Image (cartoon, rainbow, N blue to C red; front, side, top):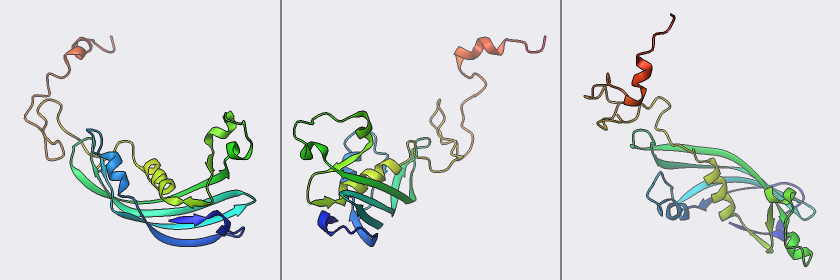
Length: 178
């Protein structure tokens, strides 16, 4: 969705729309890890307004995302329903010629240079920020056995777990409480 900067009022304006996000699938399938698969669109509720030349956006997006569990490697789906907010300021480089370097205070800010705000990349950025760093099918997922690769959620594996890590053998010989 695109909003002309001149059409952004000083009083809050509310809209709801579907934003296409299938471009995220191309981003997340470039590498070897394919942790997430995104739907064609997410539902967005947005409130936007201006204060002078500064533009403010806050809202919520909803959609179902498919993921691969980082412990057991099974595919699962989860419902994403997250709030977001961001502000856009006019680009200082376009207002003042010769100002090519941003100050430390400007590094956390987002700027606009056009007369129309394209919300698609901004919403996709908010979705990427809301994704879990380690997708899990459940908090109590036990994962896969490091020895035989069996799914420990289905039951114990056939490996003998008595041996353990050979690097820790010296600690097993220690006597505690002497």
